[in-house]
Amino acid sequence: MDSRNAVNHEHVSIFTFLALIFVLRILLMIMRCITRGASPAIPPGPFPWPVIGNFLQVREDPHIKLSRMARTYGPIMSLRMGARLVVVGSSVKAAMEILKTHDRVLSGRHLSYTQPASCPKLNQYWIGFASECNDQWKHLRSICRAGLFSVKAIERQVEIRERNVVNMVKFLKEREGQLVNMSEVIYNLVFNTMYNILLSRDVIGFGPDGSGAGPELKELTKQFLNLIAATNVADLFPILHELDIQGMQKKVRKITEKIFAIWQDIVGERRDQRSKGVGAQEDFLDSLLEIGLSDNHINHLLLELLLAGTDTTTSTIIWALADLMKNKDATSKLRDELTVRIGNKTIHESELMDLPFLQACIKESLRLHPTIPFLLPRRAIQSSKVMDYIIPKGSQVIINTWAMACDPSIWDDPSRFIPERFLDSSLDFRGNDFEYVPFGGGRRMCPGLPMAARTVPYVVASLINSFNWFLPGYNDPSELNMNEMYLLILRKKQPLQLIPRVCKKMA
Ligand code: HEM
Image 1 (tube, rainbow, N blue to C red):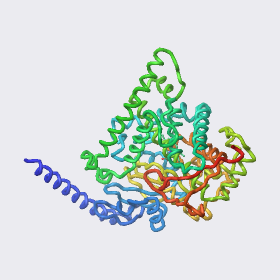
Image 2 (spheres, protein in one colour):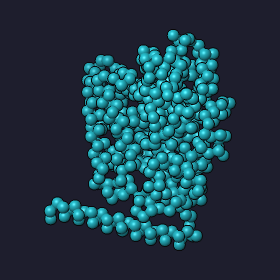
Image 3 (cartoon, rainbow, N blue to C red):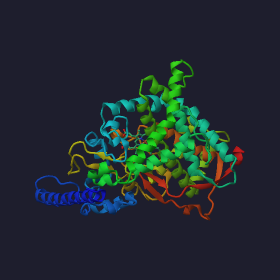
Image 4 (cartoon, protein in one colour):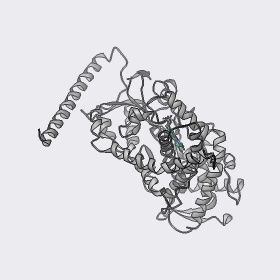
């Protein structure tokens, strides 16, 4: 058989298979209609197109499209993404049932085929992409808690965060009066701080010109995240998984190999130093070597933490700055608070809790722009009954936190930035208030919250306290373009470009 015949033959088999799936789906739908009276149904939702289901209806801006659909189909609805059933919760009750009442049975992770963790051999290395909350997942979370997120670990990192912020402020002072791409500056700050905390390495300077392997690492990390967030056709039709039609699995594999090759020297050097008993750094890498993890294990864990912590923290800071630029009243209230409580000196992290308006601004910005609007997709490890509907085993389950942020039955004037709503309120993002879960909830809740809760307000306070900011191209700052771009994370579509002027009190 020549190669063209082989390809044709392959196409015919794929089409036959897809047609078969289609017929089976129709039969299933008929069966479901017949038996609906007898047993609980799956949640309602829009009628799915043959084969692709509802994919085209939610391909772009899914957070907005799903919020609109929820108004028609209710707080718990279901859609078809190719062969997959996706259940979407969009209300406080739905979030509580998914994150609390049924947390255990809905705590699996749905994985894209692009994600290396979708391979059973590699799944044991991941936390966020661990397919189930098994002993290995517990072990990795407890390693991170002890080495990174406990009160003691967070205090050990204060010096690193403060040093990096001081360097950034110095970098910005040198660019006084010039247009600065703050989205890039903040990414560099967060990226470098993470590398310092994990590996005691400076990998990147501020601004576009980094040194050493930093720029390459930054580029590779961004590419990795974009790839695992993009749609892989195999996620719609798992039968195509082995073919890797878009070459996404291959690209991710190559990126991973390149990153691990760059880290090999760092990890190898540290093993050497430890074997000679010299130069212990007492950073996260040291704690991983101490407990005897293999290089492969260490590399995967570091990669996951960098992926999970860098873009999320950067995006949250950028949204908060953009909200403050747009809302001059809130900025001047924040400046007043900083002047009274901090004065004309550099802020220290220990002073953050004494700044209630700052904390309220960060909470309000996270409400308006939930960084991961659907949290990370969950998977039902068993069938369960949620709000009188059945969620079949294997379904993907998401919570649309963006829909809750826009819901006028939860928030007064939901589209406005009103930090005051969080003053004198016990509402918090620690996973107990289900109308406000930017870090998720239940057993899968973000373990990096203690780190993010220090970094984000500290960076924002330092920038507002040190500089007056000007928005070029806008006569009225309230018109600042706040368009969003969704790719797992909700980013500001246009980079935030600002001109810094040193505050007189800090000159
Ligand atoms: C403002 C910054 C951040 C936000 C908004 C954020 C948000 C989230 C959300 C919504 C989830 C999914 C929770 C769920 O499925 O219920 C998550 C998971 C996770 N986050 Fe964060 N995160 C941030 C920073 C960080 C940082 C700094 C780290 C680590 C250095 C981190 C590590 C993780 C990990 C490992 C998971 C997976 C947890 C699991 O599945 O068991 N995050 N994060």
